[in-house]
Length: 319
Image (cartoon, rainbow, N blue to C red; front, side, top):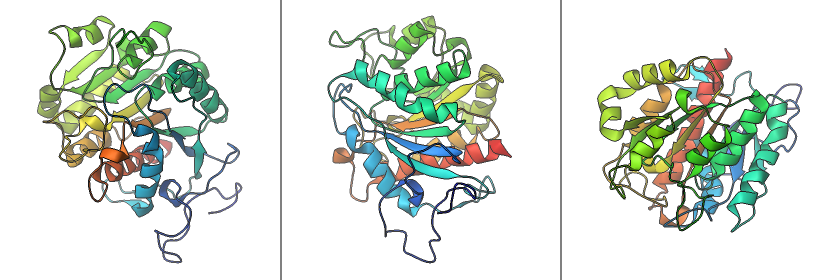
């Protein structure tokens, strides 16, 4: 790590093993000030807006642990993700277990100083509801609604669940209703699995979102998906997110609402990489539930690498 004047980054892995030291994202220093920071990993350990399997409150911790294996050079995008950049682990934001509505407020407040300083946050969830506070913060900082680009097995546009309006399955309906997301510039991709009724995905479309179901996403491939996103989002402010349940539970079992028949880890990363060159204000990877992960923690490893891909996209966009 170095000083703010020289920028923050991970220590030299040739000087000390990557499994040594305190667990932070990609071994970057834990810094609680936005001064001199360009990109910050930010944990949101909240999971009481889940509907099935809990445990995503431990997601940030698991992602950080798995991220110790990451290296600087991205051989596909041909970029050193840390070179000339100042990257830190900002630690975790405050949350209130059992109170989703208050937690959304806390997430927005916690991200505000980072966004005001021009820092790009990579949010480590936590269940998907944490994205509502994130989107509120981005819309406030951007002076208007942002586009949401989401890879997920579920559209998350229900009106309520168990009578709860603030819940991980309602996040993009609430975001549209609050005017913090511009659905007409947003895209939800990867939807699959059983639904409650024929009209489940129509609800997302009626709000203005473009919905790309799993079969269509596969048919598009990374190049087609990248082109579709660029056309949809345009040049306005945008946030990119990935729910790990977009990946098949054979590759990512550690999640709250797994759906079989999903993407492989390779495919998911390919769709993220297809967006290289786009400028995103922020990112999130959510729904990692370590209690349900397999031996070797494949879900946490995938999420850590997705966050690393986000860092790479940010680096490419900064050139």
